[in-house]
Image (cartoon, rainbow, N blue to C red):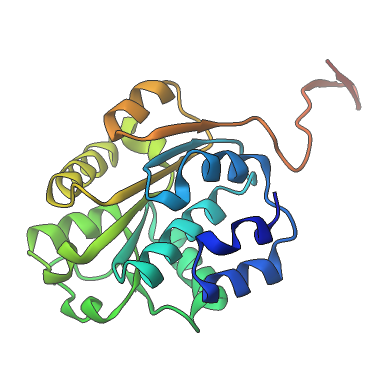
Length: 220
C-alpha cells in the first residue's frame, strides 16, 4: 500500500508531507489502516521496534487535528522521550499543526496549551493536568499511548492506568492509539481499551539468535 492509496482518507496538508517522506507503508501500518485507523477506530499496535508504529500514531493525530479540529495528546513514559518526540514532530509537522511539550511544573494547569494541537507529555504530567482541571482536556479527540506495556510497571503503571481510565471516561468518543513492541496479553489489553488489535512480526532488520563463544558466534 502506498500513500496515494489513502489520499482521499487523510487531509491534503497531511498527505503532502506523508507522501514526500513515505514511498510505501510497512505491514503494521497497512494492517492498522485496514483495522479502521483512518475511520476513528481505536487501535492497539503490537509490533517490533522500528516497524513503523509512530507513523500510525501520526496519521491518527493529523486526521483528528486537521479534520475534526480536536487536539491529540501523545503520552510517553519519560521526559527525555517526550522531548525527542516533540522535536521529531515539530520538524515534520510544525507548518500544519501547533505542537507543544508539557513536562514541567506539576502544580500548573498549563492553560497556554489551549492554543496547541498536538501535546506531547508524560503520564505523570497529564495526571497533574487532569487534576488541575485543565480546560483544554475536553478538546482532546485522539489519545496516543506510547510504550503502553508499562501499564504493568510497578512505578509508572498505576499512574498511566488512572490517566487512561479517566480520559476514556471524560472523552468516550476519543480515538485511542496504543503502541508497544512487547505485550504479554494483547487480546486482554485490546479488550480493556475497546480497541482493534494489530499484530505483526515484520522488522526492518532480521533478528537472529546465536551463542557467542571463544570469539565466534553460532546462530540457531
